[in-house]
Amino acid sequence: MDYSTATRYLISLGNEVRASASNSVHAAKLGLENITVLLDDLDRPQDSFPSVLVAGTNGKGSVAAMLEAVLRAAGLRSGLYTSPHLVEITERIQLAGQPIPPEEFAALFTVLLARIEKLLAAGRLRFHPTYFECLTTMAMEYFRQQECGLAVLEVGMGGRLDATNVAAPHVAVITPIDFDHERFLGHSITAIASEKAGIIKPGSVVVSAASHPEAVEVIRAKADQQGARLIETWQEYSAEEVWSKGGQYCFRARDRQGLAFPVELSLRGRHQIANALAVVAAARELSLQGFPISAQAIQEGLATAQWPGRLELVQEKPPVYLDGAHNPAGARSLVRFWEENFPGWRILLVYGAMRDKAVAEIAEILFPRAAAVVLTQPRQFRAAAPETIRDLASHLNPGISIEHSPEAALVTAIAMAGPQDVIFVTGSLYLVGDIKRRWSPGPPTQNQSPKPLAVASSHY
Image (cartoon, rainbow, N blue to C red; front, side, top):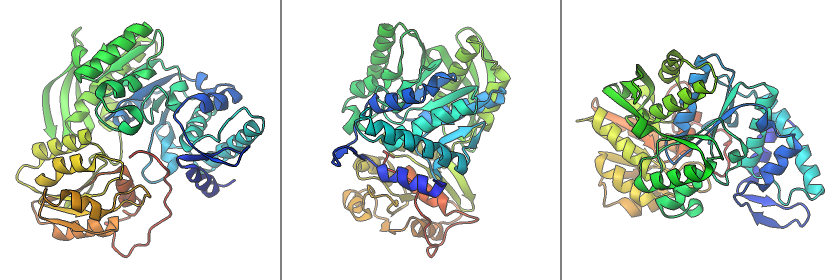
């Protein structure tokens, strides 16, 4: 099977799976049964390399990317498994900072699919594994084959029942917790935190940046129940002498024992300070466990980490930023970035979202602060129609217009921009991916033909 065929097959799985015995369609359910059967059949590749597991609502991808950069700076053969991807599915599985080659991706999936068919025929699998379960299995096997020194695994959704939770991590990291995916995780911070805290294993080490009082209570109780050692970064670590250059923050990281060293962040936004402190804490815990991670490696990793589509500057005149702020917490962080870095500037917003997101709440946060809003529609079947968003939010901004094509929406915003205007493309990582996929070598034009879309059902 070649790469194109493999990706098409994976995308076809979506959120629905077909049971081969009955030919009836069943909705995929969260759970560890399928992934456990798959990995056991492969002789548990997740046990062949050490790992860090990262869960949370916002910031888990940034933390995973920064921590992997630290491991690489320390000379470790680092692995990184994240979701979703922006342009190519191979972005999700990386070794030593490089995506898995397409031919190796295809080879892994070809072998996996043959095993899946045998397991289904033998009745060991009740349902065909989901898109995410297949990718997680492939990542675990790839890291084993490549003799990964330490892998950073980003939880897809929740934690307790997420496919990544089959790992036994040397350190578990929980980033700030807020509302998102309520349909799956619950409609309270307590319920959502309970799902995230499901990655805490007996006798483990947990680094938590979650500071919401209800989340703190849940995580403390779970750590105590599991006999896990809990490091709360907002209590144990601090950022001093904070200053910013173009939204990239510099500070002195300090812990309660007196360790202090300067940090310069490559990722933009004040919220990355808390994420970086979680990385510092996790790296130091790994160092205590014998991994050769120095303060210098931490500094280098934080200064060089890349995480595309999150306050990513892709053009300077006029400035164009891509930021996948797909929930209210992300929207609030984006507004804070505007206030701190663009006072007096006009904000031009290109916005598109998924139907199952808190669109009305996000619009209330973002739209009144923008000089104009161009609504568009990501190329995803779950995307909200721009007309629907306009009907919800027309009272929030008189300058709302609609361009159904993401490229046309950005072209329209660029045409509007004056010398004191800045453009932000946001609302969904799928929208960010649409723009990045067609941003070569310069800004997209309305007449560019879209490339095939390599995404599947997810929650961004």
